[in-house]
Image (cartoon, rainbow, N blue to C red; front, side, top):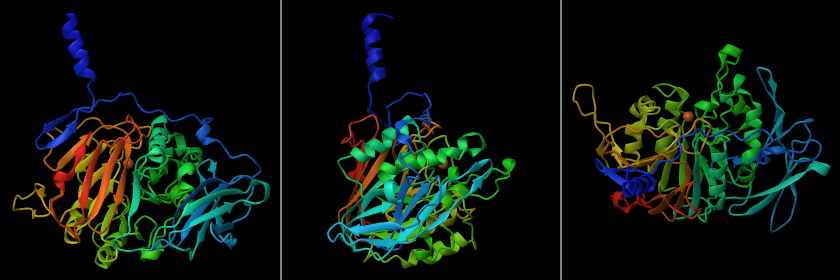
Length: 466
Ligand SMILES: [Fe+2]
């Protein structure tokens, strides 16, 4: 090979972020290392146990009611149960109050958990910074959170999107990029697959503890809204563990009763100008099932004059053009997609596939077995589907795609990252995806969303990518 040709070849091979057109959609030509991500070792600084006897660890918060005036605080103590109380106070008044919680623990094969505390703080003021303290005496630990503004149609609010995080070096990069992103996310919408502890022999639940300590630096200060993924199932009959979601349900709480759900895996919340519906890809969703019945009754309740932005979170994507988990979300799509179109859902976020993909506004609901109408078509009442399962877990990236790129796929790239959704008012929201290999402020893919209820104008041309 002569020298100029070699240089050209090397240049061509190292050009990154050049997009290539394919069947209307765009497949990024960025190619990352193919090595699998490695979990951070147990003695990593991000897993450090806080000092002091019985010090609370794995502190995390989530929304505690339907409207954002309550917060569930959870934490673990290991030496003894300690106090279930949370001490909290409004930054401005400094008037200290107590909320009383509960404690639980569980066994999983040969693992016994620490003392897991959950405490719901209620009747908080909107848009207020609160400090809170867990633990007692020498080992009390102090954190803070900011409650959302009162629910209303033009209230700006910024969500972060993270999925399939795990606890590798790449996971740590994703979380760091989210924290340092100048677009400051106020709440994380987490689309499932948290710790990946089930990849260890006997689902070593120690890795649930390390994950709790790893993400504390974010989730102790802003709520993460939990969606369950397949890695939360922890169904292991070979070792006698037959109750699905056992570690998850003991460790993580959701405010499901506030939306009249009967299980913690599907529920809804209002937050600022958004109505968030969380669904469970791994709970029954067929006709007559509790989840089906709940969703059927839930969707008509959404008042777009109060919460214009209707967002759905679920784990297994319905539109996915990677050769991983291909069509796993198909049966749920068949069940629920007509409802999403009827009720003009704005965006569906999912995870599961360890890559990034954004769809056009499409639906595929005309098929009736005999009419042959089984291709997705452009539909301005349909949501945009975004797969954001690129948190960086141990299983590595999904980098094999179906070819040619289907027309429904607007943009896809096999990189790790996170996204942000900045709701501006009832008509506009700015969305951007951020890759781990870029600087904190770089937006690799972005789009102005026009609200489907208030401003149902084709927004497909508003996207841009670097
Ligand atoms: Fe998954």
